[in-house]
Length: 310
Image 1: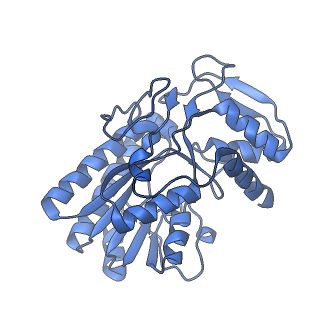
Image 2: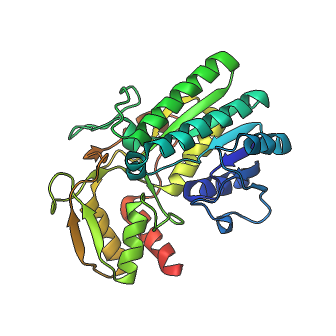
């Protein structure tokens, strides 16, 4: 097995690279380093500094590395950015994704595992419910729409060209190496700002001053384990979450307790494209032997410790 990890120098991708190396898998990384960092990668991992939108660069990567499998983590991953610049989202997530799929077809890749979104693809999840894979996609943002569209392309490539695939619909992934300066990743943003004693912005669920949106927070190492399982033995669509919802204020409280500091809170209105509540059912994936191993409080503690060390 030779696995090419797109976005492999990024937050989630680098954890997947480490998990695959522990399994004895040969790994290479394709990343344009727009958000990823070379220092996230273990020494000796072949690296291709290529943007997915560069068709010739993607082709060259496949020609040189000859992957048998692809882990597709690279993306424009911010809901906010997708609302402000939907064409950028389309270019990266769909045009870039098509370059990848065509390279998979031409070079005979056996299987692709895709980083989709459970946190955005289902739309609003009513109180007391957990979104299941059988729910129809109801994207509210261009970001969610691009992820849903790419899943349909995967299905079409599977039916027409024999490409095996699995799509993992992630909850809100958090943990060490998450970018605290990006638009996505509230845990990392809070951890960095609380550590520095800087004010934090709490975006409202409905009205400024409320508890904030509800999300299913999943620790990055649990995501990497789900990915490894999918690469070896799963096909189709799977949620990767905990089945538990936490408000933004709960995240801030947990970060403050782990850091031993309290920051000034700036209450802001809801952000365009944000869902009020998103909680996933992980039961389908759990039926294959996977389950979350790192709880919310412990995951927050580990993440804050990471930022304290850096």
